[in-house]
Amino acid sequence: MTLQSQDIYHWPRRPDRAAPCEPTLIRVDVPAHRPAARIRLREVLREVLESWSDGFQQWQPWLETRCGPQWPGLLGKQALDLSLSYSGEVGWIGLLRGGWIGVDAMFIHPFPELDAVAGDFLGPDLQAEIRRSSDPAQAFALAWTDMEARLKGTKADLVEYHRRDAAGLTSCQSRTFILPERIALTVAWRCPRMQDSHRRLSEALGR
Image (tube, rainbow, N blue to C red; front, side, top):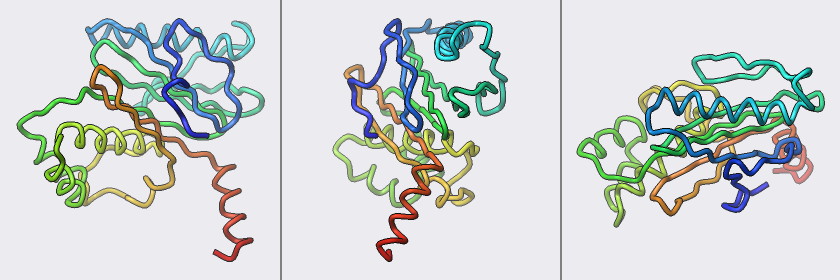
């Protein structure tokens, strides 16, 4: 599946229960105050999980972990992965059945430490691309949200570039958006079933 901007559900538009390995992305207007934003995003998450799990009787509360909420319930005998992100007064919920998902968003804006942060966390190649870009702030935001979403999708911690397992990040598919309010948004996901299918096809073709 390739996510398109029209595939983003702007709450209170409710998403239908997703098919396996198809990411669902929900945009939620939230308060600017982060603690209040966290509460609001989790209120919406609860409503979605209740509707997807066929009512409150089957709904189970999520667990708060260092990687964010994790839901122990099953949808159609499949686990459901969650990822949350915030950018100002907008919050994002990503959900995926039968795989792992990561969502990251940030405002596109220049800041004094941009080049140094790019070098430390994105690596020399992307740092050079950002320097050459006609819009370094946008280039940085696209690269940063892509990295963060992939880290979330692989449940890995943010570490400096030279300490990172780059191979693990390439296991994700990703889709990046530039939204009208100058927000860079990336969704990254991986699904073992799809990866196994691709591997078998490659083997059959002798690649």
